Image (cartoon, rainbow, N blue to C red; front, top):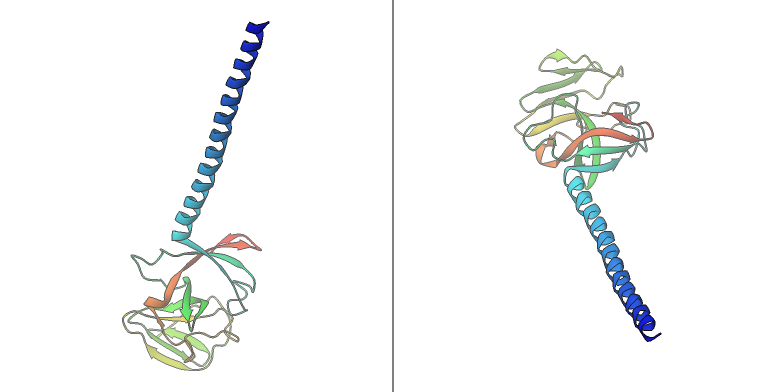
Length: 183
């Protein structure tokens, strides 16, 4: 009887030790999973950033409330190109506009049309553009317009003006919501 009791106690003690080891392993596994998730999120956020369209200045291409993903590293080794949809800082706000002019370009808006270096831009929007503007872009300057020019605050107006390269945050690459699509 004594041997049976000793064996039972030994079995219970060993089971408790195994249970404690198993619990520690589970806790360690959960901790490592959460840590990997945080590290992955930080790595992702180093390269991309979510942003939200606020207003109708890019309509119909981008609508108010569209949830976008911006590539923060898109312009580390290159400048924005014509037609790129960029995010930039202006008076503490993030604005989303399309690049129309790059450094060295001459931009002119007259008779409702947009000209780059004297040539009419075969525009992607069929909207009369005003007011009349004439500007030369210096090194590090970009001329941007919203697609919905009737309501857009963009490079045509002194509140925005020519966008400095240093204020550009990144390039819009993806619309997540409500209509998923590559930009």
